[in-house]
Length: 245
Image (cartoon, rainbow, N blue to C red; front, side, top):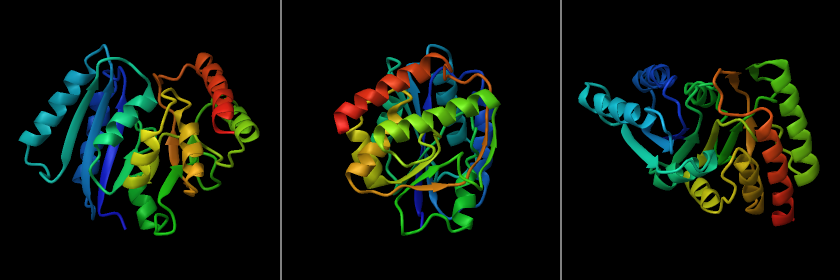
């Protein structure tokens, strides 16, 4: 089913966790898979050493005896424009026939896609898959307050935008390349509310989304401000209401 996969990581000031993430990426790349891989790092205007560490990691990998079939791209945005913008840049450059977007904190393991494939959850019936922390078979570890915020957000998204996806906000998403490139080319929201607009764009093309179970664990030093970002997202939801309805 999946013969080649581009993995896009949006990154902003992740210097403190990159070395741990690199180890996870190397472990994934060394495992046996039946598809080619492209790794795309998009630095969204970081003002720490993230970009330097990314370039060093890629250089060291290429100089090692590791699988030389793995492609790498490191993209640098001069300004911090938001997660949606970073993903848009990465997907525009992606070359392979499937595209996975995920977070560099590895709250969801890269091996999750291998589990989906092994269980035949990725098939010809769908071309877009969202990891869902609300799926009955998901294993989620997060604090009570964040869960309540997530549940409230889902209710508002459903009520205001008539979206029936239970978890729009999990960053682990898999797309067929042609769909990803189309919807991200149309994306206008570049903050954390960009995920919601993606659903609206997919719906406008009658592209069905399949939600799949996920193993998800909250990681510290999140870039999400649990006070300001929900307010920004609520405003974004009302803007999208007027734009799409």
